[in-house]
View 1 (cartoon, rainbow, N blue to C red):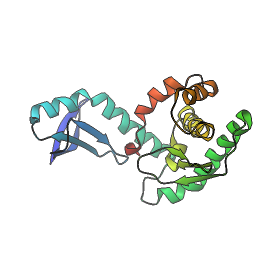
View 2: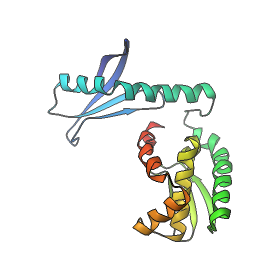
View 3: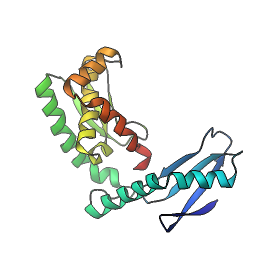
Length: 189
């Protein structure tokens, strides 16, 4: 169901999806500026519209983010964007992995660039590092945090206190960076 709302004196259209499984309201802004609001069945249209209006600053920032990426030519949001970005992502991520590995004596077997739907990166038991190609599109400090996080899993396979201490020793501002990552959800790309 398509709905409209006025955000900053500009009319926007959003798709409203009512779901039996939804426990709360949720907004997703996609790379083509499409806005989807998912709502539990029992919420009224007035409450939903108010929620959209309360999130107007956030919605505007996401639309601006994608528009800026397009203007800068940093990403082509077509279906083949993975193939277009894979080599660039491997080059950029590879340089950073090598940089941190030399500095902190990490040993890995290989780096693989993937098109994952739900995760930024992973580290296998064999020492292979896997990264989502979209990591290359993130701001540098967040990109570095994801790379350091996965490198630390080469030494500590879990998320214990010891693991987080290691991450913090390499990136002292990692807790603040981790909080900022909420802004960069994979569904936004």
